Amino acid sequence: MCLIIFAYRVHPEFPLLMAANRDEFHRRPTAATQFWPELPQLLAGRDLQAGGTWMGITRQGRFAAITNFRDPSRSAAAPRSRGELPIAWLEGREAPAPWLESRLAAADQYAGFNLLFGDRSGLWYWSNAGDRGRRPLEPGIYGLSNASLDTPWPKALLGKARLEKVLEQEISHEALLDTVQDRSLAEPEDLHPLELREAMDRQLSAQFIRTPEYGTRSSTTLTWSEDDRVSWQEHSYDAGGRELEVRREEFGLESPAD
Image (tube, rainbow, N blue to C red):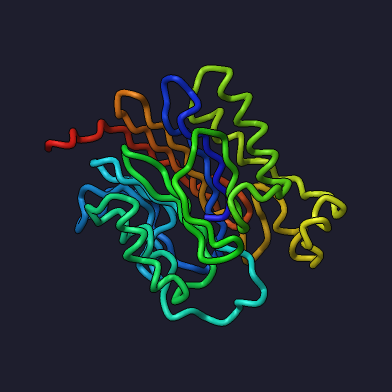
């Protein structure tokens, strides 16, 4: 997942609203979102190469999403797959703070990542790169790409501005999807202050990426309402950016006593 735009505890009816793009090599095998047969409480897509996921939610209200962290100095393969981390949270039962504490020692076994994770009690951010942040999030509108949370990359700034406008109208998956669908490239002068100077940086500067080998494989939108109703929609795309299918799920979260 390479771009996540979300509003946390800002809208009076929806504690969490989110739109996210997963960018990946087109050759990497992937299964579209579904409830996993061996983990029937878990709704997520699946990376068929390493077995993990980039974004998921459970019927009990545990949520996680992960992005890669752009760090040319850490180009060597890591011992463990980042996609393990969302699954570890989604399968668990610990509260966010102790779960995070138990994972810190293994953080450098993964390539650079940003992880959003949480439950009804709160939403947290954790990274093993950049500012190495780890904290519960305050209410607000956030943008997360391949740098620390709220780094002002053009694609993230655009998404946040569009989400602000969405919050002023009737909430819909279509409106949320539009916040992460811009296909225009950022201007070079907007990337240089962020030390993004390579030719590929501009190719990847669009919200929705299209290159022959790498690009936006799927876009996911999520609404989590005040009455604990979850609505999830995933659009999958081919290498040309054409839509392949749409998957939708809607369900009520189980009560804590269930």
